[in-house]
Amino acid sequence: MRGIATLIALAFLAALPGMALAQQDCVDQTPCLLGDRSYHVKVPDDWDGVTPMPVMLHFHGWARQGTLIVKHGRISGATRKRGVLLLAPNGLGKSWDFWNPGSPDTEFAAAVIEDAAKRYPIDRSQIFVSGYSWGSAMAWRYSCENGEDVRALLAVSGTLDQEESCETIPAEVRHTHGLRDTVLDYPYGPDGDELYPVALWRRTLGCGAPTGTDSYSTTEKDTFSRTIWADCASGKVVFDQHPRGHFIPRGWFAKQLDELLATGS
Image (cartoon, rainbow, N blue to C red; front, side, top):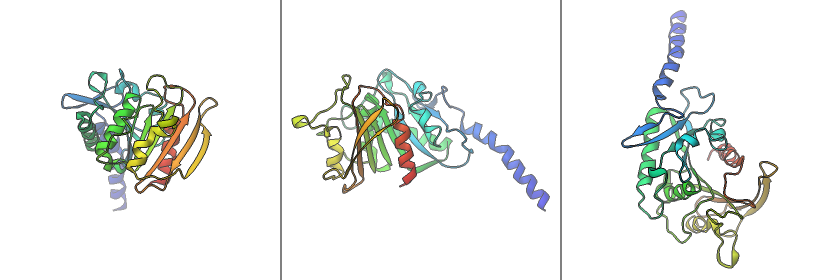
C-alpha cells in the first residue's frame, strides 16, 4: 500500500508542470484575450503552481501597454521576487478612461481579475491596485469605484481631482509624487499645501492630523519624506513625497509590497 501511495504522489507531482502550463496559456508577452480586449500576466519566481498568490493589478502609463509592464524592472521586478501575480491590462488606444465616474475601464479591470482567477489561484484578501502617471489616475478611479476589494492602492505620479467623491474605498492608500513633476504637476493645495495630493483619500477615509512622519531612501538618488495617517475612521493613508520629477522611483513598489505583505492585513 505504501508503494502505491508513493506512486500516486509521484504521478501527481509529475502532473503539476502540465497543470501550470494549462493555466499559463498566456503569459509575459503573450496576451490573455478577454472579449475584444486583453491583458498580460507575469507569474512570480519560484511559484509552486498551487499556492494562492497575492495580485497586483497595474495600469500602464499613457502610450504604453502591458507588454512593458511585465518586463519592467521596477514593477515586475518587485512582484516576481515577492510571490505576487502581476496583471497588466491593456488600455484602449494605449490610454485610460479615468476623467469621469462610471469608467468602462473599471469594469474591464475587474473582469481581468476574475479571468485571471480562472487561470491561477489568487488570494483575494491581498489584491493591490497600482499605476503610474495616467495609469496612476486610473488606479485611483478603479479604487474609487471598486475599492471594497482593494487591499491597497499603490499610486505613482497621478491623481484624480481632489474634490471628487468616491463610492468605495480601498483598505489602504499609498501614493508617491515628485515636487519637480512637470508632466502631471505636483498638485499643491491651498496656500501651497504639500500634503494635498492625498486630500481626497484623507477626507474619504476619515483621517485626522498626521500620526507620523519618516524619511527613507531606496537608492542614493531616491529619497522620500513620508507622512502617515493611521488613525482614519477606515483604513490608512501613506504619502511619500520626493524631490524629483515624473518617473517611477527605483525600489518604491518593492518597499510598499514588503511592508504590506509583512502585515498581511
